[in-house]
Length: 107
Length: 117
Image 1: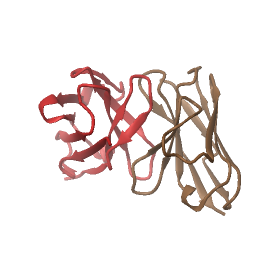
Image 2 (image 1 turned 180 degrees about the horizontal axis):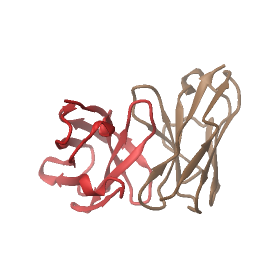
Image 3 (image 1 turned 60 degrees about the vertical axis):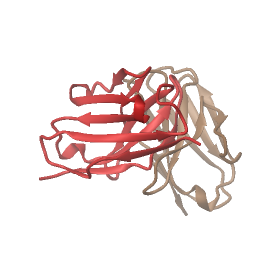
Image 4 (image 1 turned 90 degrees about the vertical axis):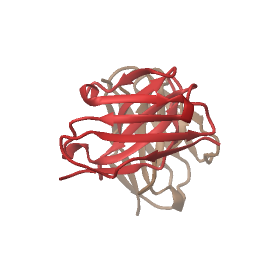
């Protein structure tokens, strides 16, 4: 199985801050890396696919980068509705695996 | 607009079989890959498996001996059966649509299944 390691596990930030979350995989996965946002009691919502492609309808303040084993999700200017938990997920091989999540909290 | 809706019992006894159905609208069940993902309360996401090509399957090895995913093309539905459940199987179960090497781009709202006597 491909292991996914996200960091940090949680962070506190203020509205308007630039936020960066990293995801490292245990083996190279090319660009088969996706990012999701999950709010309490809701299903995950796809933000970024193929490492850097913005899903339709997702605000442009979200961006993704990376390839191989190291990936980054960036929120350029944090908004109140962005406080949530974020997960990375690889679609390179089965079993599909997720990172453990990064909780973004209000400072 | 693709929509998915899970249905099934919210309470299952230990050692019994958990059964859920996902009804899909806005897309043909004969296209794409269709997955089940679960999330224990307060924890992260675990992929259970998927079905594609109207019957081919791929399961997470950690659950493979207990999982069956099937499809009902006439009703545009797919289903999950998880046998010999224990309290560790208590989770919110989601169904999701995916491309072959792509992301889970559409999700159901999730259904909580509790394993308890």
